[in-house]
Length: 476
Image 1 (spheres, rainbow, N blue to C red):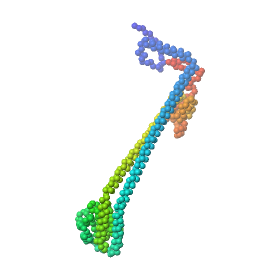
Image 2 (cartoon, rainbow, N blue to C red):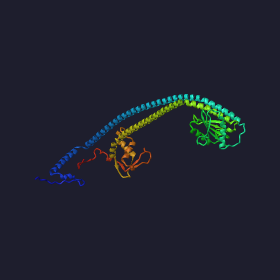
Image 3 (tube, rainbow, N blue to C red):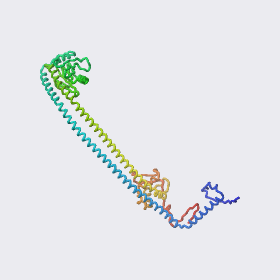
Image 4 (cartoon, one colour):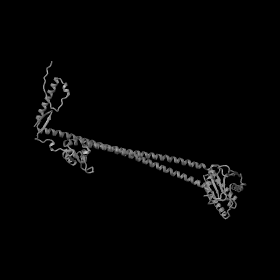
């Protein structure tokens, strides 16, 4: 059985013994004490061999070496940032030029489309103008005939106003009977027949049948002017009877509202149907003669209507051509809208790229600025200590001290007073800042901090130094 020796070791009251020490064997306890003692002995001998000047020099060399490494890191970061910024700028310019070229191509394409549309419009206008001229020629005869009939109507009206107006009032069937008497003037007309339609709704009072055409007749025996509702009624009746080309609204003893400027007036309701307004028929010296004049006028008009029907295919062709042109214009307008949409999307893409590049540059700038924090943190730890809220320091005082301690780096690292203020604000809570002026560039006070005095800095040569090494103390 191995014998063991018990020794007593004392440690400071404030220190704690690791739990694992209770698991060591006597041999392991011996090795632990021996190795620790040898290390401690060597350390004391090494420290004792250093003079105060050597210690100061060693610390200074290590500090300078660390500063040199930091300077090299900063220079490398600057070069990398410069190279990266040049590449980004070059890429941005190339992309911008590419988008400008694409935009120019789109604008040229739009201009081409506009020129094409303009040529289509000129071509279509020329075609339409030719067709209009042809239509004018076809209707010239109709217009001349209408002017001639209007002149005849004016002459008849001038004669009629010289006669004494009849004062007899006709009502109901008496007015229809009077018109039937006037219509007897057509007995010698080929194919004539008078058909009573007053009992059939939407057919007027009579239909006058002739070999050439039929006429819808509505006779009125009013004491006052024939009102507008009667005009609308005969208009609807004529539209309902599409096979009829003419309707006569005959007022026996009064005029017709809005159509009383001439004894006989005409109104075309479409290209094939016409309403004839006959004012105060019974007041004429020979009403039957007036009706015959109206019939001959309608015969000429009917002949022109038939001619127009014969050439209707040309108008259909013109309409078809016009519709095709309008379809082309719609397609071109749709294409222009799509091009404008594409251009807007391109502009938005350029703006998005510009924003992304700006964010990249801002991020790089922020990283460069943040790289200065290590220098500032070291200075802060060495020169600033916390105190009561009654203790205050001005930001200008701290800036002066910082510049004095870091003259070599202020200019190289481009550290300004504004950046220094931002450093301070990142180290203390906002409640500790006392800003007297609302201007963001003004100085401010910081509560609860103290600027260390010279006694807390590196010890000068000749002063006593105390070094604590593994629990031991060496005084010199």
